[in-house]
Length: 250
Image (cartoon, rainbow, N blue to C red; front, side, top):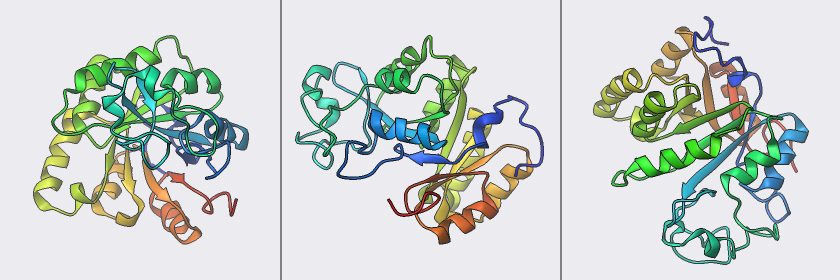
């Protein structure tokens, strides 16, 4: 575990392993990124990781992909549809439409930590996206963190909503190219994240080791096997996982 106390005092950040997109089971009511998968994680005693993006009318919805085809009966980019149209599409076999972020927050109601991964792309204006997430959090009193691959988003929350825990997601592009590794050091100084979430396939690495030695937690994703879990337990503080890792076959 991290050696020093986190001065921003989010002790819950690494207390529980975290169900990736909720504790989902494909082909059931508890499809990924649904209210049902979030509540399954709550009932099993895990934290919840969900993905969010915005519709054409700037409503924050819980959905991983940029496009609708893989997980719904709709077509095209999520960002091209308004919220009322998006609600007509059913997520997998769940029988339910794509939830909004407030839908999930209301259901969880502080019963488990929620880690909200904010999806973006390089050319987009992140202001409306971040402000939309902030608006969803208003009045919510449970433990919640934002995280993103996009350091601009993490920096935005540092500036405008510093009371929330924030994390920078670190993947292959960031760690395996020297120029990007240098920019990672600069961005972590600018963003001041409370945690990093590192690709499990990149562990161990010197950046994550230094991060933990500095007293802040390392989360790791996506742990999908017991072999991955063994590596993750040694080099990280909490696992963002999918079955069969942690919970066994489902």
